[in-house]
Length: 236
Image 1 (cartoon, one colour):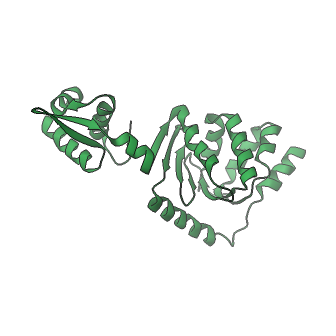
Image 2 (spheres, one colour):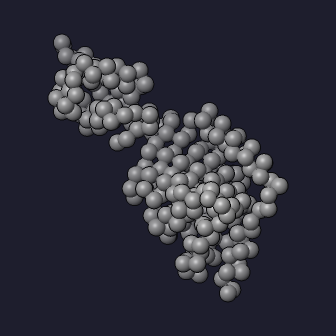
Image 3 (cartoon, rainbow, N blue to C red):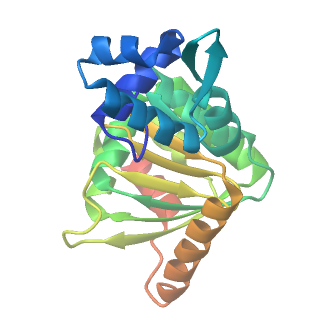
C-alpha cells in the first residue's frame, strides 16, 4: 500500500495498521525500526489524519483511519487489474462533460494491453451517448496502435466528440496520462497498472484550469481529426 508523499517506513507502518491495531513497540519489532523513530512517524501520520491512538489501560494502541477518509474525500490508488475501476469512474460523469487529456503514446498502447476490450467499447458507447467531449494532446506514434486493431475496435473509437493536438517530436511518448475534469482527476500509468483518482475539488479545479489554459494556447495549432482518420483507415 504505497501512499503519495510517504516513504518506505511510513508505508510499512500503514500496511501493518491496515491489517490490525498495534502498540508502537510491536510495530517497531515487526518492521525492525527503532521505537523512537516509529513513535515519531506515528505522531506525524496522526497529524495527517491517517492513524489515531486509542488508550487501553496503560497501553496506547494505534489504529488505521486512513482508508475510509482517503477513499471517500481525497484520492484513491488503484493497482493491478483494479485500475479499470479508476477508469470506470469516468463513465459516471454527467452529459457534455469536458475531459482534458494528456496522453503519452505508450499509455495509449498500454490501455489496450491492460484494460478489458469490452470495457473500452463500453466507455466509447457511454461517451457517445452522453456527448462527453474529449480534448487531447498526444504524440503521432499513438496512431500506430490503430494499425494493429480489429475493424470493430476501430469503429468503436469513431464518433466521439473530440479535438486532438498531435506532436511528432520527442514529446508525449511515455506511459503516463492525465484525464482532467473540474471535479475528477485521473493520473494513470496503464503500463505499470497504476492509477490515482483525485476528487479534492481545489486540486481538480486548479489542474483543470491549467490544462484549459494550455489548450487555449494551442488553439492556433491544427487540430487532428481522429474520427475522419479512422473512417479512412477502415475503408483501406
